[in-house]
Amino acid sequence: MGKSIKLLTEYFHPEPASTGQLMTELAVGLEEKDFDVEVYTSQPTYQGQETKKLTSREDYKGIKINRLSSTQLDKDNPLNRIINWLSFSFLTLIHLIFKSRQKDILLILSNPPILLFVGLFLNYLRGQRYVIIMHDVYPDMAVTLGVVNENGLPVKMWNRLNKILYYRASRIVVLGERMKQTIIRKSDRKIDVSKIRVIHNWEDPEFIKPTKKEDNPFTREHGYDNELTLLYSGNLGQHHDLATLVYAAERVKDLPIKFVFIGDGAKKKKLEEIVQERNLRNVDFYPYQPLTMLPETLTCGDISIISEDKRVNGLCVSCKIYSALASGQAILGLVSEDSDVANIIEEGDCGLRADQGDVEQVVEHIKFWLNNPEELAMMGERGRRFFEKNFTFEHALGKYVEELNQVG
Figure 1: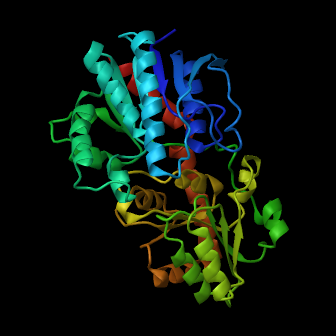
Figure 2 (figure 1 turned 30 degrees about the horizontal axis):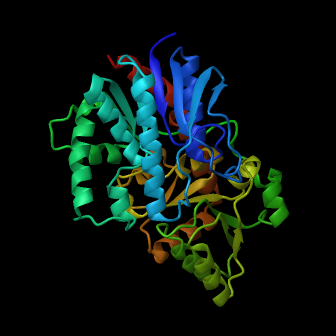
Figure 3 (figure 1 turned 180 degrees about the vertical axis):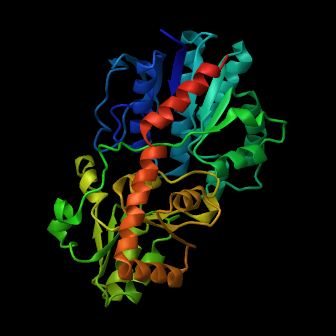
């Protein structure tokens, strides 16, 4: 066996949530590349699995899984979420103090963010090396979401600890160039910039692949065959600008255009009320669909929509960008001009961008696509090619293997 990796992640197999799937694929891939991978995770919490407690230890495809009995309070309550974070991080630390060795490399996901400090503590305790995978930058995300006060003592202390955390890390993996610049900016110390590496997340090119509308069962069932269809799939949450899409739908209600929302979230009820009040017949809502239906639902349209609040620019990268590229649809990005998603759209020449709230620009883009179906199709094709070249698991795994092998 090669190097020993302890992967710390709250979500892992059999979690259906995207983070759990990504970390499971990464662990299996590293194991197949001759790393010795052991995982510390929590009990599964999603899609009806709350009451199904799994064994505390399991072998999965050669990987040793340790499931810790951390608290699983209602995550919609911010205080409960913090308690869950603390519980899982503390139990992980206790287990690693007794079960890990100095030569083990800690590979730590930034969800929950407090978990990162387990690596820092063990680095001080016995010089253990740790590699961070940054999916979100905290405490900045918590400030943006209104959970904590930017000028409060907890945030100031957190930022000070982060400077040490980044400085002592062997590697810091981020999802985009904007995130990389954020980490550099937040590190007042003279951090070695070369250890901050951009490794994107990925999508399975065989699971999500372009499908002609006439061959898509979901499209045929709901009658989207002969309409320009814009698809938003995922969380309809407070920090996604979805009202702009509904107002744009009103502006084009007399054209053969359909807006399709698949998912749930805090904004769904309000959006449905706007649609009802304005009697919009070109907007449809569906709940989350089963995982097995994603190859149909994610390819049921002509245009895939990605909405990202400008306040999170440089703090995360929407995972929707990878499935949107894989689907072979053109992309409408409601994102800031200097965001990582905007850069991907521009570099891949696979869609158009508009600022959040800019209804006029969205309508202009939609009418362009309606009147230029050939360019619409070519954008989708270019996006798929760009995806195959840059955002498959094989690309990501190769970069992870390279970085981990360089950790001395």
